[in-house]
Length: 152
Image 1 (tube, rainbow, N blue to C red):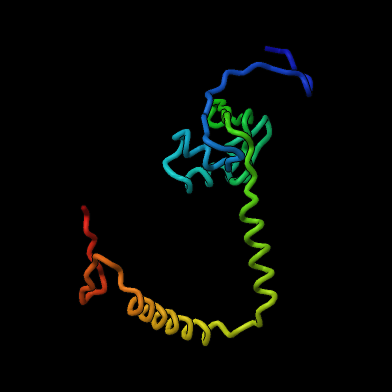
Image 2: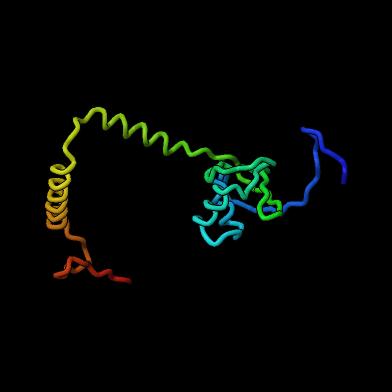
């Protein structure tokens, strides 16, 4: 073939479809779903070393977000991401981290070494108080602290 393709010109390729449950999904996870690699570490290594092209361009970002219709080339094969679900951006993490930052800003900073030992002691004492004041019905307290579960 001596034809050269101009940029923006569409070409038709045969690709293997990889169905995912939600998108965006990270590139290395698509490799794991498609069973192209033995594990996530292997996928990350192959991507970082430059063995993968996404949408026609070399890709070295392991956590690149893949959407429905994105295609990638690996090992002289083409694969396309297929997902019927709507796009869901992870907004929960951002909201939680902002709330955590606000609560941390209101509290004075403490020395980690002294507070961690105090926290451990206070947890044990509060747990012991909670168990003493609220025994569960239908269960026996054994010497090891475990309770039995009665079925029927």
